[in-house]
Image (cartoon, rainbow, N blue to C red; front, top):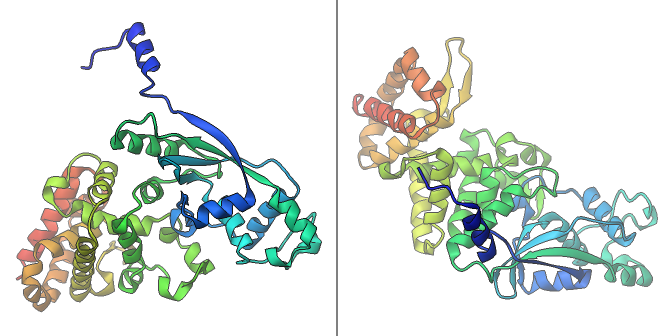
Amino acid sequence: MPKKLTDREIEELYDRGDLRLSQERNDFLLPQVLDFVQTKKWLNLHPEYQRRLVWDSKKRSLFIESLLMNLPIPPVFLFEWDYNRYEVMDGQQRLSAVTDFYENLYKLKGLERWSDLNGRRYNDLPPKIKRGLDRRRISAVVLLAENLSFEERQYDVRRMVFERLNTGGQNLNAQEIRNCLFSSPFNDMIVELAGDSLFDDIWEIPRYKDHIRGNHISAELSNNRLYKRMEDCEIVLRFFAFRKKSNIRGSVKRMLDKCMEDHMNSSADEVEELKEVFLSRLKLCQDIFGNDAFRLYDSDGKSRLSKPLYDAVMITSDRLFEIKDDLIRNKEKIAEKLNEEMQSEENYELIVARANTADAIKQRIDKIEEIYKGSI
């Protein structure tokens, strides 16, 4: 049991500033915001990937109207990860509303007080209105990196801020936080794989390629349960997190976090190889089970897609990939054996009802591997 600190030790800890942030507050003119984004001094302005509950044109327009009327708006939060280089931790959608409007990417709509401006882009505004908007400011709270002596502390601080900020009205979930914190080619690959057509078809997600056009996302996709809060990306990540037996320990959240951490510096070649591994294993699952690869059926014939079953089937397909031809030749036996085993209350509970612990994950994978091997 760790030693309990005395009051004096607590005060000394406070004086050292190890658990205190340095911050400053600045106001920026809207044209400055545009310049900082264009010169990449401010990063992470992709709300369609940072958070998929994206503002529509009306909400963006009302925000511009609020700026024009000089109404109070919440500050954005920036993290200074290097001197004079900032990551936007909260406020991506507000800043994107400004930068996209200045770049004439959308027309104003649904304005209430300035309805005469509806249908106009920035370049279409009267000169005095443009000048008035150019004089408006956005406040930013800047968290400074200078007192964070090593990278791990910076990661801890960024995570804490992401988890506690709630200025947008809805807390980020674990995968949205990972997506913000671990910006990397590996993270980009996770998003790309979640948009693979075979993956989308199996998980009943509207195909990305048919529903994303530039910055426009169809209502059908944006309202999809798995897409909306990046659960599709988390499903992809689970494969990489559970792939090595030695990594299956601790909580699922920690396993997924650690997987993202471990691949932060993966090279382009390594990421491409991982991508091909995932797609080939997914294709093998489809070759054996069709598009019902991760679907469980109950005694009434009703079915549902199962993440635990996905974990076990995908990892088993990875472990036995070298004998994939044998597996495909015996696919009917494997499917029949799996269906037979799932009639057992014990096995069904293992896959569906048991807590999602490291031991349960290992047991599920071992059970599916046993079924594969027993069918060839």
